[in-house]
Image (cartoon, helix red, strand yellow):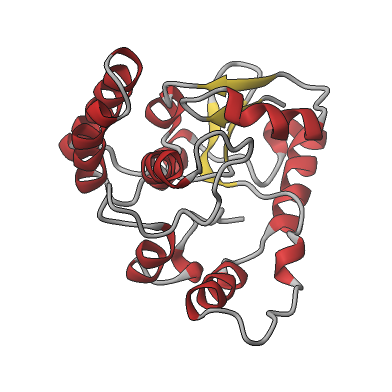
Length: 222
């Protein structure tokens, strides 16, 4: 097991890694390289790689524990936007128990596991990567380079273009949003990622535009 945090500011991940106290390798991908290599477009996602280095399941949503938000009652009287956000989060399909069981089956049976896919199946289930997606990756990388070498404002135009070219890549969007909506000096990322004056989109409006919470993740076909 290897876990990877996607964040251009490594310090933003320390709190969560320390809380998890992992006993496996826990890495920080400051360049979103795993986006390009494996097709990650949201979190949490995973790929399965066997002992020979072969991908036997492509990038897919990879929750392994039911979130308490699933069972939380939405309080009455919340601001409309907060209420809608809770409802969209609760609408995200929960397949954590099934996915965890699939991993356990693979660990036990290896290549004989019914959840291991052939090379053709892996390719068929992988997200297509065309010219727009390749250009988006380049724009995101250039934006991050300028953020580090020139300043945060220098990244904006390139990250906007990455969002335009690859609108279904939530890692690009959420990375940009959280940097502009998290108060300066805060030791915790802003997870709401609401409307802002820098980027056109925000988490809730983009989720709704994409079909709501039910369409938010690339669900595993188990």
